[in-house]
Length: 136
Image 1 (cartoon, helix red, strand yellow):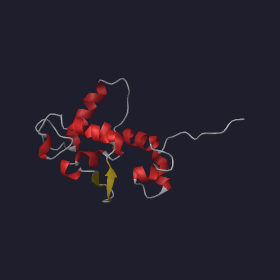
Image 2 (image 1 turned 180 degrees about the horizontal axis):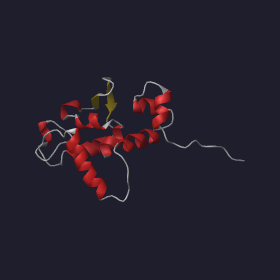
Image 3 (image 1 turned 90 degrees about the horizontal axis):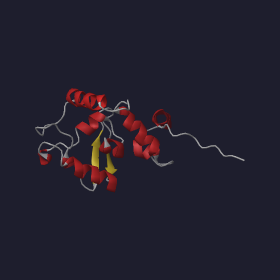
């Protein structure tokens, strides 16, 4: 969840992330749009990636998010695991809500660069930050 929040990428793009894609920047090829870009690796993201190396399965076999045998999660397998985790949580939300939260929390003026949306209209769908109104 932390890697998803730090990057704001879609679940499918997270599941196909491999260690060879990560250096000083993170290489992302979006599955939905085929768009390629580099994302900076913040200290918070670096910490989350370091924690991912401790997950079960061989971390240097390729996949950042992997199943217990070190293989890439299928979307169906990941969703089954997510469903089990959600069942134990008092808060009900979808995985995609993490992307919404990440974009909403991005600095004002940098939301489009963070989300890599090409137009402000699409960005508006994801940005749930409340506007600030002045007072007297």
